[in-house]
Length: 158
Image (tube, rainbow, N blue to C red; front, side, top):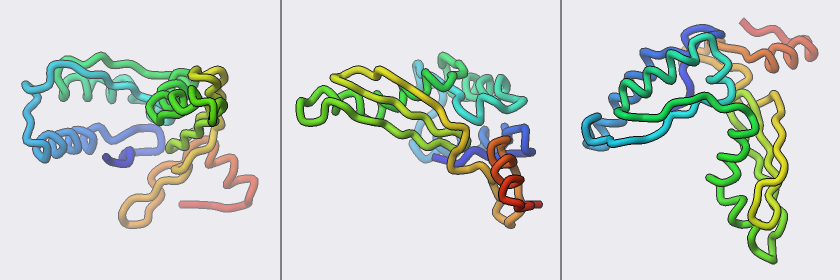
């Protein structure tokens, strides 16, 4: 796992992502030829960046024969609800309604799961990384939502 690296406030660092993929394969003891199929879905803030298509292309080129796409908030909330087990948990008579909260880097997705189905979704334009710093403490990126919150609070970041 890696946090999304930024080369600027509007661009994700594709070189850093390529290096991450290389390290992940090496650590797993795999080569790209060993991967038959998979999926890459750019979500949240990554899907909003200027180079979102390049990110998806990078992963598809680096990872084998992958299906690649960008996802909107509804699909992302559904994927999180299923992946977290919230939909399955809501099948139980003891927990027939479950709220799944997926806090991402730039957005937070909500999914109401009822009786084994995700029945409602919503997205909030605030996440865990509305301001991102590099290892030297320099601000690398501020999301639009982060910028609004900072301005309203009268806080400046550089």
